[in-house]
Length: 518
Image 1 (cartoon, rainbow, N blue to C red):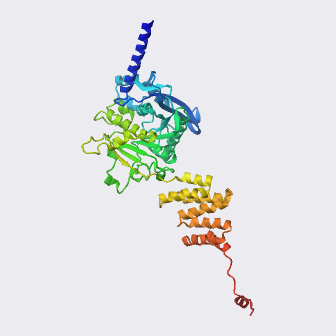
Image 2 (cartoon, helix red, strand yellow):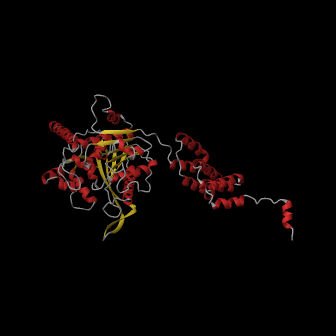
Image 3 (spheres, rainbow, N blue to C red):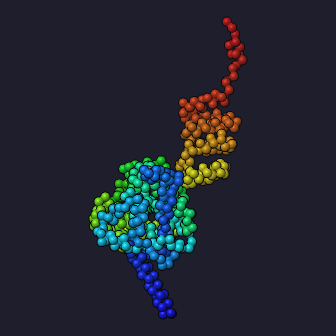
């Protein structure tokens, strides 16, 4: 019995060793194994706040949400998923029986079957590792709509201590995704839904959050970065956000505000799409225009959009019309470097481990040193001032008295910068004056607006209104007069001055003379 027990133990250990080796050198190629096994789960739910046509017979239902989650799991032996499991999930995403085109056209029948039978790194519903891990929300791209397109990067990041969550790219009203504002907003909302769901998982650290976006997902990810100030880092993969896109996106989105883009950003794209620094001088790219926060521009030596996806790791070298041409060389090493740089970037900004990323930046800088595989440009970017929402919230919650010194410090650190939009402050002041019962504070809000926008006739008009309401007649007259100087057609100021200014007193002699009858 003891011999059998020992043999069983040896077999189990051998199986574990074989599995670990196959996982380390399987679809991941030469990528280093992490301290965790990547766990995987699929969350099938719906967003009841949005509708989606389900079909002629089913009618309209809540928007379906299929959330793919990779996470750090314990290094225990478990049965890994097969690649065919990912394929089946991809077919269920879009209710189709057709294989993804890159696989159907890029591989012969024998190679495809071998790939379908092979194991991937993830273990279904594996027990999560101890602790909580940073969250990365992934936005998919056009023609690469299924998370199948990026499973290698997702598994790799999960093995190194990240929760990666994503959902298939689905149009607003049907499967087709259009290149317009509506569908970019839909993907951004999908990513926010995924973020909220993933943050509720017990192994996710809700305070550490990064964004990844490929292709159209990079456009949606940029909008997400601009309207989610709690994001810690943004990685865009071959997305049309560096220079003006032919569609006008993402700048056409109503919430595209570059002054709000302040978090660390790394943009990886085909080197051929990056203009020379001289060419960028007259028409700066987003890399130059981004005023705050560190930025990295990675020149990837490829001319294939597909090399930024997991298809590059699957041995597909033949041309696939609509996706890529015949490969001139093996794309695996390049894709592996994309994965390594991605990990180094997030380790830097979500875990505080700057070593690997700084090493890549410094490689090749010293005479005689080896050149880095990818050229990486870096811009430091100073820390930005408090965002507008924070300042407005501070005024509302603590009052203008408490917010004033904070705003003054920000003005001193960032001279000439408009910290709060004129119309926002004006609207807030009117709420204080008329609707919130904070009339005295309204004066301070309008005074601040006059300091920030001294050349605005509207600002001085509102300030005069607040002074008049509080019985500060002389100050009201001065403000209305200043408003008229800036805009002589301001009828409100003219009317207010007539009310506030008494008619001139008539001289007694003249009055008597005027009273004579002829």
